[in-house]
Image (tube, rainbow over all chains, first blue to last red; front, side, top):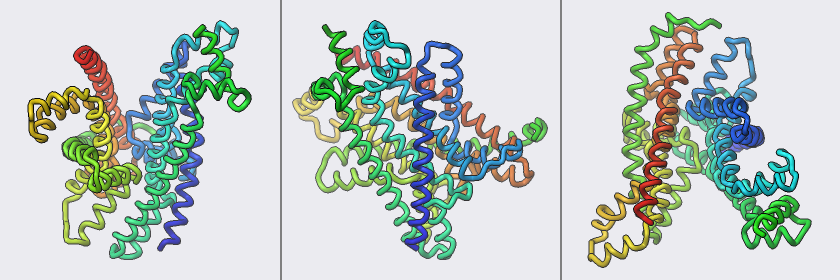
Length: 239
Length: 222
C-alpha cells in the first residue's frame, strides 16, 4: 500500500514543481502587466486575473478536460492539468506581485529614473528586489495552495497521490479507508511543511534593503548586487 | 462545437437547483467556520498543551487538500457507525477546513486589539466570558470582517469540490446533465459564468467593506 502512495507522491511533487515554475513566471508577467502605465496591458492582465480568480479551479479543470477537446484542442491530461493549475495559481500570484510592487515607495521609482535607469533596469534592479520582501510570505502560502490543488488532477485521471489513495480504497473494498486516507493526509502535510521550511529560508535570505541588516549587507559589497543597487539608491534619496 | 442556446435554456432549471444547494452548503459551512474558527483562535491563544494541539490541528487542516479531507469524512466516518447525508458531510468538511483559516484571521484580529481594551475590562472586573463576548469579540469580528468575507467567497468556489462526494451542487448537476446528453460545453460554461457572477461582485463588495472599515477603525483608534 505504502509503495503505491509513494509513487503517487512522486507524481504529485512533479506536477506541483512544474506548475510552480509556470505559475511563478505567469505571476511576474501578469503582475507587472497589471501595474503597467499602458491601459490596454492593464485591462488584458486584469481580465485574465479576474476570470481565473472568479471561478473554481476544479471547474476550470473540467472545462479544459471535457470542453476543449470538442473545440479540437486535444491536450493530454497532464498538459491541460498543469496548464490550468499554473493559470489558476498564477492569477492569485499576479495580485501578490502587483501588491508587492505597489508597496515600494514611489520615491524609489523617482530616484531610479533620476539616475537614468530605463523601465526594465529600474524594475529588475530597484523595484522587484524590494517588492520581493512583501511578495515572498504570501507567495509561500500560495505554493501550499498549489500543492493542495494538485489533488484535483486525480479527477482527470492523473495518477497522483490522491488518485492512488482513491484507487487503494476501492481495491480494499473500503475497509482500509482510515489507514489509507490518514497516510495520504500525512504525506500531503509533510510536503506542505517542507515547502513552508524552504520559503522561511528564502525569507531569511532576502533582508529588506532598507532595514539595518539589509543595508549593512548591501554596503558590504558583492554578495548582494541587487540589494546594493537598491540600498545605495535609497541612500541617495535619503540624503 | 456549437453553442446550443436551446439546450442551454433547458439546463437552467437543473443548474438553478444546483446553485441553491451550492448556496446552502456554503452558508452552512460559513456558519460553522465563523463560530468554530473563533473558538479555535481562543483556545490556541490560551496556550498550554491544548493550545498546542489546536495549533497543530489548524496547521494540519491548512496543509492537506480539502478533497482528501472530504473523502476521509465521507468514507471513514460510516465505518465507525456515523452515517451522515452527503450534504451534511460536505458542510462539515468545508466548514472544518475553513475554520483553520478563520481561526488564523481571528488570531490576527485579536492581536490587533489595543492592550487598553484588555486592561479596561480587567479594571471593570469583567469575567473572562464577558470580556470575550462583550469587549474583545465584537472588535475582533469587525477587524476580520473583510477576511471572513474573502473566505466565504473561497468556500463558495471550493464547494464545487464537494461534487466528488455526491453533494448535488452546481458542478455535480452540470456533470450529470453533461453525461446524459454528451454535451459538456453548455453546462460547464454556464457553471463558470454562474460562479463568476456571484464571486466577482462579492469580492468587490468585500473590498469596499474593507475600505470603509479601515477608515472607521483608523479614525476611532487614533
